[in-house]
Image (cartoon, rainbow, N blue to C red):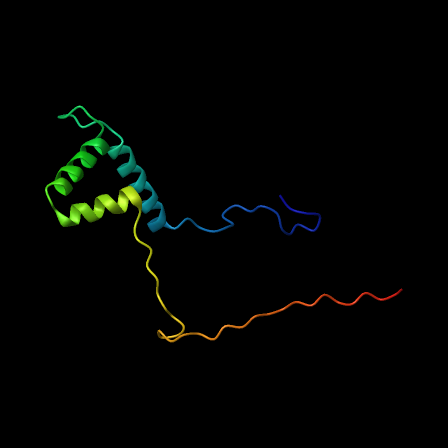
Length: 106
């Protein structure tokens, strides 16, 4: 497609080229997702359930890493704070007061 003067419009091969590395990651994530949502042939249960049960078993036996993983998945990771501006020193704070303009008599 082009306009009156023959310029512009859609052209074959135009646009951003697909990133093969990104495409490979997308395919891998889909394969993993498909696999984990499938059924374990031995236990006849969903694989995700089998993994969750194994993690719970390890955590309930005192495995600290399993407990951390369980908590991260169940209640979310703890928030981390990073001070990148003040090197631990207290920052000065300022208050900005916005004063509306006075109305004219016009």
